[in-house]
Length: 288
Image 1 (spheres, rainbow, N blue to C red):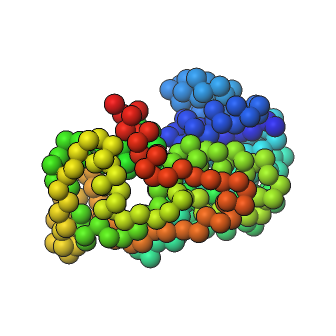
Image 2: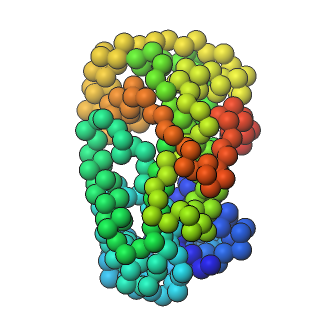
């Protein structure tokens, strides 16, 4: 199969593209810059230059790719879904796997939630043979925005604050397990017209995740529960003062929502995710 991949130069793309290439597929990667083009070439993909913000160029790039299928890793949270769907349909690409997120299930008034839900609606209403994949929090290699930061913090700090006590549940997914599922979904007729929540094998509390991170870096930090209200007030003040805040109120609030998902549908395609203990140990080794 000849597969066009958007978002191939990102964190997830660096696992998805090699998996697709390893299965014998021809991969054409959309790139908007020379840096992105160089990155995807190193992964074994051909390059098609275009920008999601330029619909005309996107239409041309999709057509010129001569692809049989689309794997869209680019975020659906910026309003590009209808443009991507239209470009695929115009190019005669029928099969598509598009990555959404389990964050659409949040009860918080997140700004991107409405955009992402509308994106999924547009995909379902299209003429594509679509599959929607919704990963939960992704981790597994240096460069992830979650566990890599936690490992670095736990290695350096004797104390780890837990807003709200750290008792809420999280179900992180390893990037390579997610990449395997995406590559499997694009090949599977059974996945057409289906949406899949893709997470780790079991939910863990934030406390358990921090403790696991401590074990793999050889530390046993003191876990300190922080009352949620004052923590939110402090983070809100920090957000107002910081030019580029590394922590936002929405992130703290998300830590205090249970994020657990049924992965039975994904397992019906052979999905068998590794344990968090195994995944975080491997990530810690890579960071070392």
